[in-house]
Length: 104
Image (spheres, helix red, strand yellow):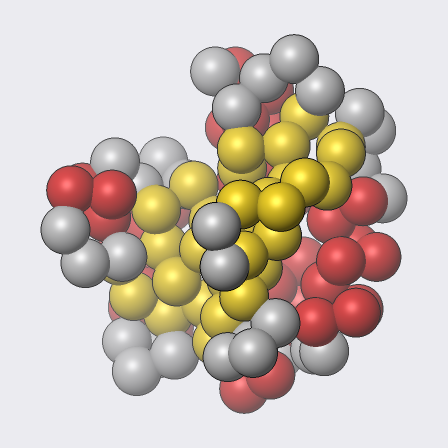
């Protein structure tokens, strides 16, 4: 999946807006918290997942999907190298991140 395809996918979720976030692009549900960030240069996405989901996705391929280092990872933030992972995995994870964002 390319960065442009990811952006289109993320903005397809109801109420999602895009904003700059340091060296990344953030995706958040309007009035709620960020549920994903994209770094175009590295084709990496960080998604906020429930810890149980983080564990499941990381087990698929820990070289391509892994907890963000530091305390962010302990909060469920998970890195996905989107240009190396099958699209359906990204779509599924993003759906989980969006749903979790609706709860927060």
